[in-house]
Length: 61
Image (cartoon, rainbow, N blue to C red; front, side, top):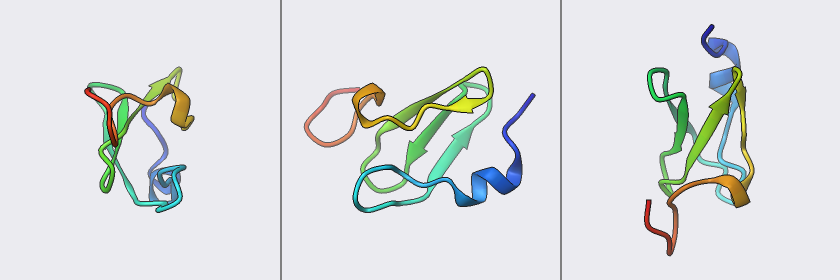
């Protein structure tokens, strides 16, 4: 099951810039268009926690 397209339209990065996210259905990830953080989608639920994101400012992916 994929994420609902309407949900994808309103999801944004939880950081202060609230940039849109790009969804990769095959990898089950959401990537911030501004900071590059990668958020996992587990059991069709986006995990939008900065502490659990990969990559982003000052980090290696």
